[in-house]
Length: 341
Image (cartoon, rainbow, N blue to C red; front, side, top):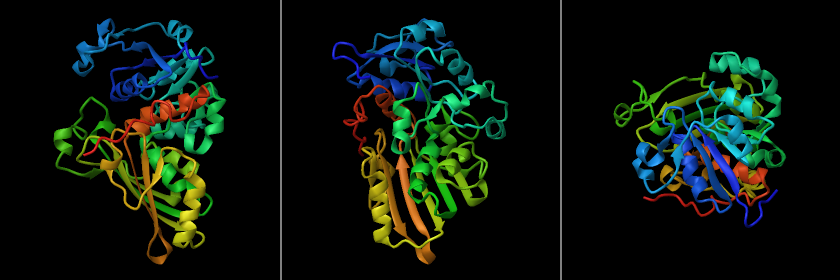
């Protein structure tokens, strides 16, 4: 339901102090139909947000640790930006009381066994998995429109899924290498994620074991055995750049590829098909750039790029919110151009 001109949506963010929460706040502040409700953090409760993040010193918001019931009662939409495994509890307490978008991984999968396999712990609320809609606006916008609770895709997963999706049902094998910036590891540095180590380095990790694999294979209609997935740490802060090589059941010439991609994404406002893909063309925007071409021996070569904090997180969450409330899908995002150079 579209809000009246005089009544904006009240949007709250649970877990404001991580990179995802901060980026979501930036996007919501620019949204013409949104007012900010609660911004919560247990660690920084009762603190002006400018004291924690001086770049937000101009804002008058105070971080709270408000009870979830109060947040639900006074919010039209609640965004969960808590760590994986922690978000489960918050979603369980809020579900059915207000509309929710969960940016963690806790409700992306519809199978508790798969969740346990990839996240290392049993799911605390498996009975809720089928009550949450997976939020891919380019693929299942109609489901999102009628949803009360939405799970945002993972950043690697979103890019890889949109690269492969046009060929669903035709893929014999897919090889993907995706390089991500240091912001994807969150704000707490670790031995392998601290930017001074990454700044002059590239290193692959969790090869064929990354937690986003179940999302990728589900949308692509393939099995784990049909995918090689090589996530890699890159020497930059924002963005994911990926390359995929597909072996298909049928041969596609370039005209057939172009027609297929146009029929799949021609109506999607944030998917841009480019001759060449570059991180510098998408950083800080909600655009995802893709390129498709035929290679040697019938291999389809795909490149893609997105900003992991915008299209890979907060931007898609705002798209989902827009769909859930009958707003223009591009509201608050359409004028958000890439930062260049």
